[in-house]
Amino acid sequence: MVSAQLTSGNLDNSFNALMVSGGGESVQAQNGGTGTTFLGWKDLPMELLLRILSVAGDDRMVIAASGVCTGWRDALGWGVTRLSFSWCQDHMNELLMSLAHKFTKLQVLSLRQIKPQVEDSAVEAVANNCHDLRELDLSRSFRLSDRSLYALAHGCLHLTRLNISGCSNFSDAALIYLTSQCRNLKCLNLCGCVRAASDRALQAIARNCGQLQSLNLGWCDTVTDWGVTRLASGCPELRAVDLCGCVLITDESVVALANGCPHLRSLGLYYCQNITDRAMYSLAANSRIRSKGMSWGTAESVGRRSRDDRDGLSNLNISQCTALTPPAVQAVCDSFPALHTCPERHSLIISGCLSLTAVHCACALHPHRAGRALLSNHAY
Image (cartoon, rainbow, N blue to C red; front, side):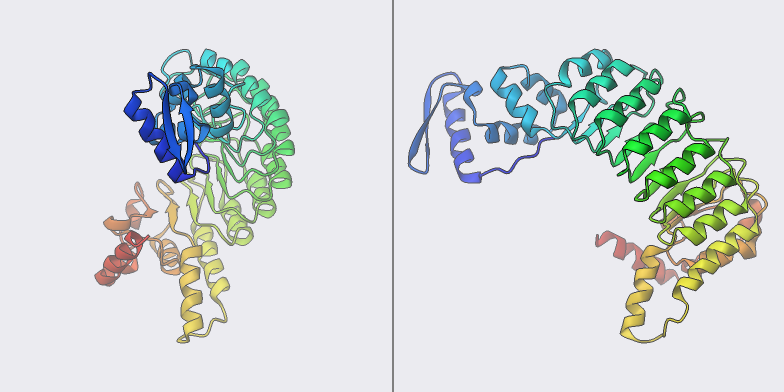
């Protein structure tokens, strides 16, 4: 919510003195031998005000404080870098338009909504004032149109994380333009953006956003192998890809991701019923290729295997992929030690595939491994 470098001693003295006075009368705080007079709460040093609000941890208090006086407004405008309006049940649009010019140093902004409130005018106000914005959550903003994406493309060039899931009015033309301007994107959530997430848009993402690490294309049912293969070739840093409900994709998409994205950690293929054993064997084969030539038994090889375990697939959702057979899925499970079917670490999700109930991770054969893995996780 609030970021500032605070000098502990002087601020503690100021705060204690103000507490003694009750904030209602003039008080002198001794700061390292120098007397500083405060007439009341409005005369708080900026650093102390930011500390109080950061301890309070309530964005509603920050917004209220910005209206106390011009000094507080200016201090918060420079010191507040994170805000969430997710608590706002009504009039979020009007609130944003009235506040955007006050918080020009925002880097993280969440506008997640239970019911749609935010309109293009508010997003334009944010884009016109918050040029340092890095992370923006607009999920479930059903009222937004392409105007919002064009505004962000012009005003928020430093975006690294953008969540527009459920924003079904956006077009692929607007998304293509956004990616041509916001080239630092690392996380992009397009779940349910059925018009925006087209093959043409994926081609633009591959061309413009080479640093992309996470992409959610859930239920974007017009996406095909053509778009995913171009994405895989242009975004080799991808760690997480969600293709759940992309009913047109086939093994070609999975093969492209397995070959082109060596750091892939999470892959969602729920209800991708055209996926066959070929996709699974491709994932397994690429795991073996990366570890090929490794000498076993040396300290160096143990360290490399440990790094490979962390770098390989750790989450795979193949629920409702009914064409898959146990040997192919078992090959994937055996190739990636971080994939688990055991209840404690359920990361290989095969619900709805009755034929795959025989697939098991190493923990089923060696229960002590599960315990060790859990302890390892808790250590972090």
